[in-house]
Image 1: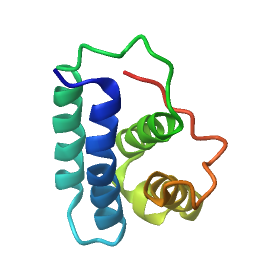
Image 2: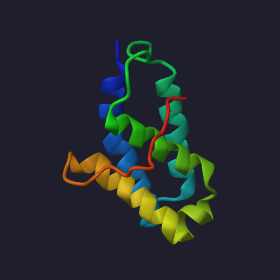
Image 3: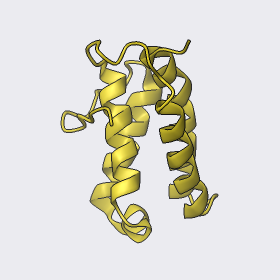
Length: 110
């Protein structure tokens, strides 16, 4: 049975790929939105580990998930401050410690 830790490990690279592809206009917003909802459906199946403390990656992961769902598609593409935040989150998730974790990116589990 999948755990929270395994779920985050498996979905982190996918999230980074979809967000970066959308920001680079390689995919349309509908694909990013579909990824969001598919991920939420998979999350609903996770039963083990939800009582455990968050890891740093998990905080950033959920923050990034919230941002792509909360902000309208034009803001994701055109708001330079928001884009910078999204890129920082992606870099932190993929950098494996090479990049500092954004201090204001503290997402919570749905």
